[in-house]
Image (cartoon, rainbow, N blue to C red; front, side, top):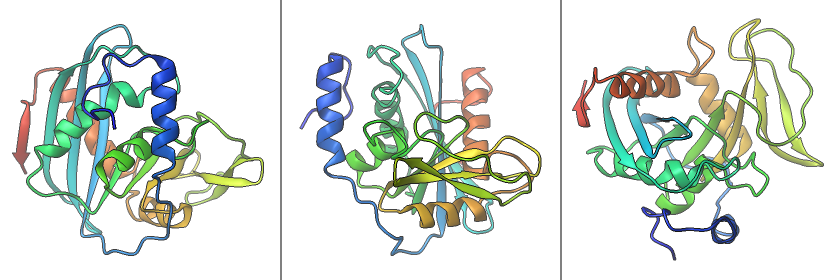
Length: 231
């Protein structure tokens, strides 16, 4: 298999072939393990820059109290191509993952799981190469069709590709835009929805990815340093 930490020299056809290979390794199944620590992962980059900022935060579950965070800055050469963002993002996230002294039971990634044309969004890609249970929680739809869910918090509708349920469109806060949840690895749609429902606080974004987003932005601004920090 291709080195999962280096996609810099891949062509788009090679990347497509790798996505198809990884897709065959996906495990989409009901959660069969306890969750005591949940992780949140986010990436920040300028699409025209080679510098990627990646962060993973750890929260206790279900209390959602911060435990620590891992931050990495990495240079990547793979181009910005919609549908292939994992090839820019996964190597940096894997480095952030590797410097975690404590691994979360589930990683919530700001992005998609199987709600992707080739079922290989960043959460699915990360799970397939790491063996880690993952799910995606994205702010925008990449792929699939859905009916707008009712406006109250907790309402959801399925995200579909023809008859296949790829995920759910969940209203995490009354009257705000929904988020798009799909399993990545070692979880199914129902398990993914249950976890996000327990990770939702007062904000539109669930707590794991909200904390990760804030940490990565502070890192990019120089307010936080690279490496792992215990909270």
